Image (cartoon, rainbow over all chains, first blue to last red):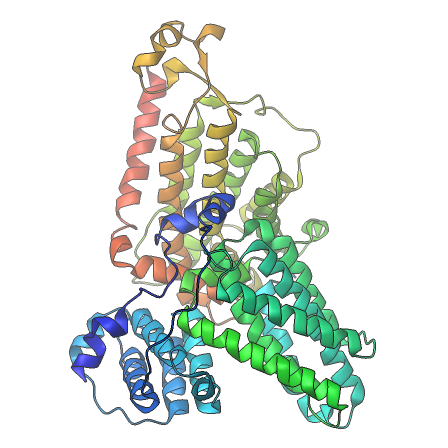
Length: 141
Length: 431
């Protein structure tokens, strides 16, 4: 389970739009818009994923975020609801995960859910879990 | 009361869930949901037009465009209804359109994320009950497109701070003259935020000074409010706003004179200052609504600081302000202007380097205001209509490892700047 949480693949931000954390908010909008590259993205073939394993990894990350001391009550509650929607018992996680930013865990869980095949992502439990995880990211922490 | 696009969206989604039991029997509710989908399609199309991805022709842009088109198509086939859902969705679309100038790519993506939730709720409502095959097919298409978009949202989740754009209030400046102090505070901060971004020419120095006075009064009130909590760490944000005014002293653009007809922003700043000044220093004597309004308005002060920082950058680019070289830090290329003292030959156009003390002060004030806003959210964040997304963004900013020490460091910087400026102006200048 420790391997899940600290795996670089799980916490990777490679798929996120490249944007310097502080500069994006402090620059003028049109300057930010100028960063939009002229290149046209092409859909890259995604490696096949095992839905059951991916869902379990996402559940472990949501569980870690739900008991992270840095997360506020609303974030914990929403993570627990998302975990409940997935319906996977994760068991106790490593205490070392508490030192990480809970937002990173939630975002990694969301990316895992997003990496599921479309048919799996469209399942009500996955949709519900993704919705609550997104809500955990925007609610007061 | 000033509302925000996020609040309207929450209300729209809640209303859709409440009226859902009636949708199967009542065709008017379904038609209302169909028309509301058209309005949300308009909002999505606007977001797509402004850009929701940092990469051109990104898959996400195509998905948003497709969903906007599908929503518009189903609305064109729905019987015309002007129900509650349609009016709410239309207001959301208008708010998104008018906020376009204030948003970033990430903020627009976050807004599209929230809109997709509302689209899903309305689509379930519109597709509830008996339908023609064509409408049922279009509802199925919207659901499929929304799920595709939500999968992209899961792959590219917006960060906490990206949602703050949805908490920017929609102002109604005509209400600033009303008597209820809490309403004045809410409308004034909404007007300040909106007027700071909508100018085609940058704000002048008098405008910025008026806004710093209002922000100082507001943050002082928030500090007073949170000081009742015993464990409060006093980060003196109000004093940092004074430091911004001190940093602005050397600069001039001819606007520092009494204005017979101040603009909306200045009027709002004056109204907020007057109301909070009249309320007194003891928060125990405030009505609870005023305390709630102060806590809510404080959440928007860091955003205002960032807007003013952008204004200062615009001054540097547009050469909108002047200063005597002798009042600025000495630079090799300005020896003649420096020696000319306060004569016309000593006037220079300040650039980014000259204006850096002001931008640094505003950056410091942003961190300190975020700290106060966080304390105010902890104290009174449970009230309805509280800007939760903005509060969440501040908490994330303060919780960031690189910003962990920001409340203390800018505080020292602000105090040092006040002392330095006082000493700077106490000494005679070369003439």
